Structures are given as structure tokens and as C-alpha cells.
Length: 87
Figure 1 (cartoon, rainbow, N blue to C red):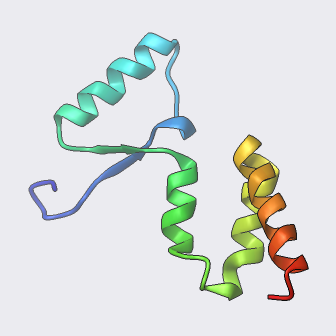
Figure 2 (tube, rainbow, N blue to C red; figure 1 turned 120 degrees about the vertical axis):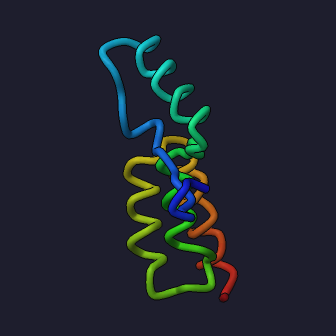
């Protein structure tokens, strides 16, 4: 929590530096200052909150399927499995 009472997060895999080392050192400085590192997939999960929010599943799932690599493939497989179970 910063001095104004906010929790501050940085999406580390959606930012970069001129080199891997520069990026890593910048993230370390931010962590020392109290910033919480997080990934874009974690942000997506925070925005979705849970899969009971059915009105946003298609959008969040679409982003995950298109850009989430193996996690996107796993999500698509789970979605197909649930659709076939009569749920």
C-alpha cells in the first residue's frame, strides 16, 4: 500500500525495457517501493473474478483463448467439456 492508501500493481509481462536486465532491475526497484508484480493473465482473472459471472465469460475466455497460450488451450478444452456435459 502506498502513502495515499492505494495498492499498486505492475503488469510485468505487459511492459519491458531496453534489455532483460533493465526490465528486471526496474521491476525490482518497484517491488522495493511496495509495488506488487502481477501478470496479464492474473489481471484478467481479477477482472473476471469468477466463472459464475456468466455475462463476461465469452469476452474473458476469448482473450484467454486467443492470447493465453497453453492456458488458453486448456480453457477452450474445459469449456467444450462443460458444454458437452449438459450443464
